Image (tube, rainbow, N blue to C red):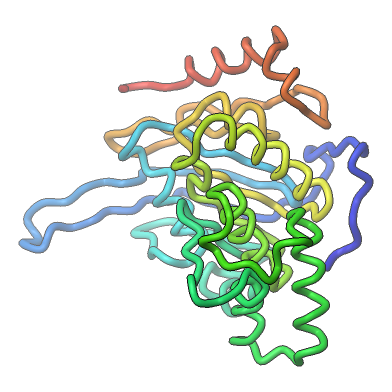
Length: 271
């Protein structure tokens, strides 16, 4: 893993180099009859800094998940370009530049937590001693050191999602994509995982792109919030989140937090 960073260190993304560049990106889905088409994204331009925590927010159908999938090489663009450290998304996937955390952790019930985290390392044919060390590090990072030999059914939903994060981090990617990872969890579990995720981010300093429907979640976690509006999907606002870090539950009670939530909400158009 990369060297950890002191959790109290203030990170200023404005001074960091650009990690991901999205230039004039559009995605059009054509119907099977080829007579109709849906414009999922239109004219998207965005620079994301190295080590930055970015959230994409907007209503259903606004294209935020589509953008995530284009950057991660899962969906081709119709027009425009995307670069990750100068690489195309497909080249970046081959280079193991990023990991992905989905809405569900999709764990294998018949494998222990250790062996679930170990799966990508096995597929990469990493030597066993190195696999063991890496899994130990991942369990420590997500705070599950005592649960490695448990099975997914023995863990809560929040703990299972932390296993999913650990598995995504196992190959030490530079970028972590998170597609509504906490949407199925109750509010109490979400609040705990918000703090857990920020702790993990402070330790690893990965570049994180986080998709959510929740404005409050986006403001609490992010350096910047990118606001999307639909028909067609486009960026209508980018809000800098100037709340000091580290953040905790008291942050959500501050006047500035409330103001930023209102600013993000005011960035929507055509909803």
